Amino acid sequence: MNWVKARDAHFLGLQTAVLCVACELISENNTPQCLACGSQALIGLSRVLGGSLRGQQTAQLIADAELDRLVREFAAVEKIDADTATRRLEQMLIAA
Image 1 (cartoon, rainbow, N blue to C red):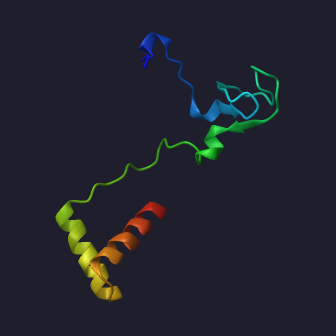
Image 2: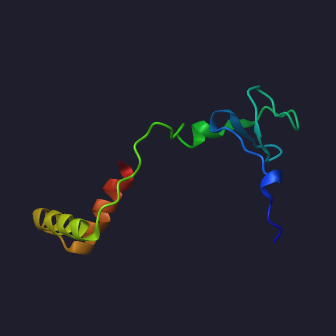
């Protein structure tokens, strides 16, 4: 595999990065047409990915002991086994 060197890399800002469905190229573009092929089949990557992540709080790591305690408390309240409680809590954390 050939690795790209830093001097050959191209960086794009998320807010102006678009994917052309026709030619499958990602470019920085603020026009209604692909600059490579002229197609109007552009998808704004910021919109697809849910917008900018700047200014959002970073994820908090929970210590294993604390997570274990929370799962057991949740399981006791819900009257379910710990594995089911863990899955439900993971789904809740992903959705949050």
